[in-house]
Image (cartoon, rainbow, N blue to C red; front, side, top):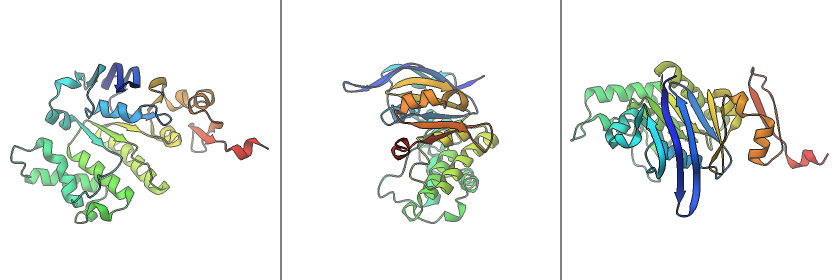
Amino acid sequence: MKSAFAVENLSHAFGTQSVLKNLSFSVPHGKVFIIIGPNGAGKTTLIKLMVGILKIQTGQIEILQAPIGNYSQKRLAKVSAYVPQGLPAGFPFTVAETVLLGRAPHQKVLGLASQNDLDIAQQAMNFTQVAHLGRRKLDQLSGGEQQRVLIARALCQQPQVILLDEPTASLDLSHQIRIMDLMEKLKAEKGVTVVMVSHDVNLAAMYGDQLLLLKAGEIVCMGSPHEVLNFKTLEETYDCKLLVDKSPLGNLPRVTVVPGKFLKR
């Protein structure tokens, strides 16, 4: 199967602190690929390397069969889009203005929006169901609405791959499912490869085609939810007591953390 990403012998450090250690894996094209693991596993560092925010120190990353170093910043932004965890403080734009920023890689030197740019921005807002919020400022929106606006901005780039850093963090249950359903829709209707970091192993089980489990900068295992989310692997990785059984929604693993008070019985 054609790969959207190929990572080979990737290592990274901040000063003397090693964060990623000799990672090698590939991400199939047109799938939802979810990176999970405990705090400090290196998940955010990995995704920032994959999108070109951080410079590679050791190893190689290919995007769509070409080394990431071969891409100019503008060309890279045409094939891949990144959705951060949240907005910077004081972000001054309206929803419509924010989404239109995604057209920047496709615009000429003056950066003037064409009618085609405006049409694509409108389509992205319609797809993410934020068109009715177009005139509102970003700081007037809920967390879930802000995330959908950031995804709409990413869609405006018309990428082949989209990378998201914990897009459901700090959202309530309803907004978590809306964001994940949107990722599934992106894959199914637009053929976009989705790569995301998540702390929620149950969302990963329900939506991930493939999971990558990291601990302390190393790959513990990679594969389908059934292959990755098993009792022995998870207890050793997260260092806590838990149960893994079959989800009532179908043939999917369900992970339940066991609180200490139940272990005393």
